[in-house]
Image 1 (tube, helix red, strand yellow):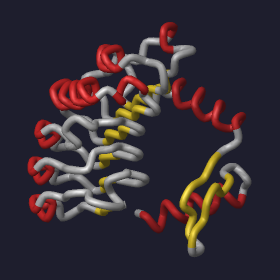
Image 2 (tube, rainbow, N blue to C red):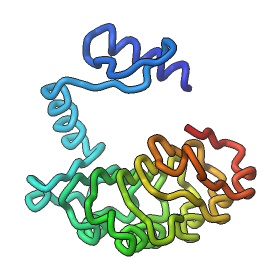
Image 3 (spheres, rainbow, N blue to C red):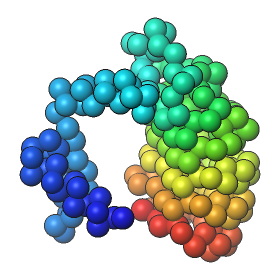
Image 4 (tube, one colour):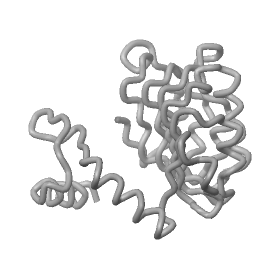
Length: 199
């Protein structure tokens, strides 16, 4: 699947639909699209009810309840995020949430996701600060359908043993995680995750 994805990405690059951001050792690390193409892709995805991207500017005018893939950008309160999520949400992406820099709000959000979005497969929480406990809550083990867990730029340095219950987890993204380069702690239960690929 990765080879097929790389081949498709190269086709898009050759057609100038995607631009290479960063490359290392001949492999593409990051990519980007032109603003116009991004706007077109978002509009088409929303028309097809594939994904809903919410930000401060348009959130009040658009209900996202019917979408199973949702992204929330800076400025939207975390309690509003979950109130407007479809309970059958498959992907939840949170970007640049300043409120997640408050440890109690971060923990409350993760706990509520675990209780309300039981079938979520992709959970990406970027730029969150959790200095109080420096760990994800044990309840993360309830998300048994989770395939992707992103903690980019997070201060989480410890995962709970319940992470071993996520038998479907394929990717644990710790990119740019301050703790990942020094003293990040993985529980022994992580050995149970036979499909996991650390990035």
